[in-house]
Length: 92
Length: 135
Image: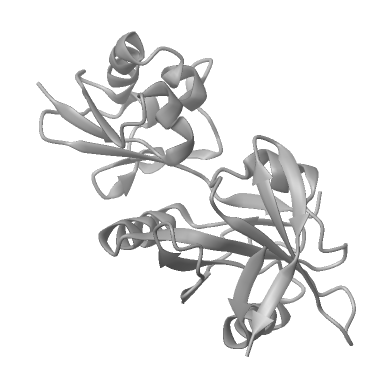
């Protein structure tokens, strides 16, 4: 079972420079735990305790997982998960 | 050093003035590795706030995919401060996540003049850089 996960520039230190890696799992949560075995530390950049970090965008195919099931979002073979750090800031 | 055309420089300022008093934000894409801003991409500020900005997540996906398809990078990421100086704030620094980008800050706090400054923000370090505007 292979799910492609596209990795943004700043997280490629965890993947040896690779722009995309593969993993498996039935939910996003399982997928991230699975990826962490090959790319230690990656999960913690995306997950804080039991939830996805606020300023990281995770997409399943063309949708933002915030509008699906967050970490519980089901994933399957052939899906593409994309990670993009949010672009944000402010006066403070 | 940021080298940017007069046209793109003015488009950033015009966007900031138009959205004032909300913060304006956007990207200028350029060929990967060229460090040359070419394609102006104003973005929605999904926060619509005078003190915070954030790219809409689906719009960001669309733009980032487009840049990838075009072999482009985000050469400039710009936003405006509407009541404070054109200097990166603590949140600007902590959320900066495109190490190759020139972070342009514009301030619209003064009606008669718009500040336009550029910075590199890498691993939490901020370095101001000179801006060369080409005619």
